[in-house]
Length: 251
Image 1 (cartoon, rainbow, N blue to C red):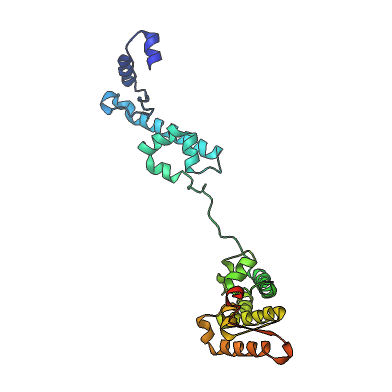
Image 2 (image 1 turned 90 degrees about the vertical axis):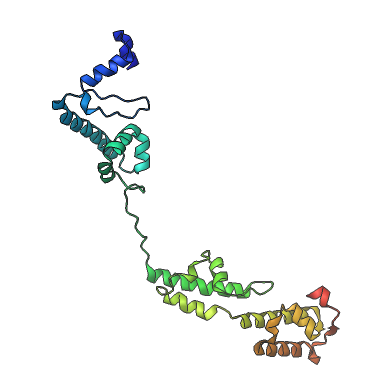
């Protein structure tokens, strides 16, 4: 408008008044398409002009949507900000109906899973991982669904969809240890350590080194401890009795 006023040698306000009388649309200082006041327009042009203006913006928007089939509403708004702004303020319902969703208009579909194949593979992985954990060197690892999941690279998977994975559920039931079973395994691992060292520990020292605390009160664990000490103190072993002396160095 300033350029037109300069070429005509008239004020900008005069250009605005002339444009209004002629029924021409123009943008305000914020680049928002301005609506012409009805009282400033010829009455016979009002409806036709509004309809033409609306159709122009709609066509421009539909063209942008067609040229960018994979774009979502945010991307289209960045590509055609003025068009989106005009339709948002003057034709919002139409804009909503003719705009893609924020995910690009593509429906979110759950991935298809071959549960039979997945179940067989996962059950085999569960058994194999449990065996590896059981035979791993060092202090025994408690074989749980969580430790198995970490070992096979699926920390949460063994807990999920067990209704669809009957073979996996059966495998977990076979290999997962109770706390008592894990404690008994630690007891016999401790026996092996003392046999390698040629020592015969006292009961308290042995319990501490095996990592027993309150669980030592379990009948199953008590029986395992008694059997372990009997094995270590058997005359054929020729072990040196360590009594309480190894409590600091061996626990």
